[in-house]
Amino acid sequence: MNAAVHVRPPVLADERAFLSAVRASRKLHQPWTAAPGTPALFRAYIERMALPHNSAFLVCRRDTGAFVGVINVTNMILGQFRSGYLGYYAFAGHERQGLMRQGLRAVVGRAFKQLKLHRLEANIQPANAASLALVASCGFTQEGYSPRYLKIGGRWRDHERWAILAS
Image (cartoon, rainbow, N blue to C red; front, side, top):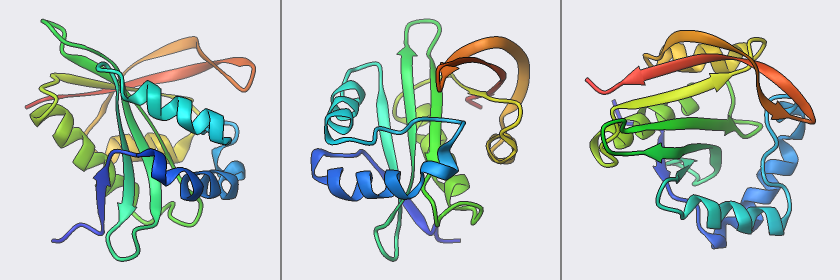
């Protein structure tokens, strides 16, 4: 089966289309995440993702090139740990179509094969049913629960800890 999406790193030239997708997705993202929504925040995101311990991917439709969503692998630690943290969000109009599932599977494959990671961890707010279903459908398993784990929208929020290991 041919994938309906491909993944690629975001670049500065994506700014206009990216910011447009973020604006259109504000309701979809709240209260789960805050995507970079200004030119300055977008440029800071590109700079941060260019650091050696981070890797960012745009999930793009093959037919139109439209941005489906973003998947970030951050805070990678190599050596004997070989682990990274996963963050992601879909853009409005592309959710609940299986496109982010295809993108996440592609990024997980790259993380294990190209980045040589052993483990990816995703921390998800318990009420975010769509996000929990996404990681479960990609083979992640729930490992635990972290009270007041991340500060999002000015509040410390509980998260479920999900992970996948290289085979």
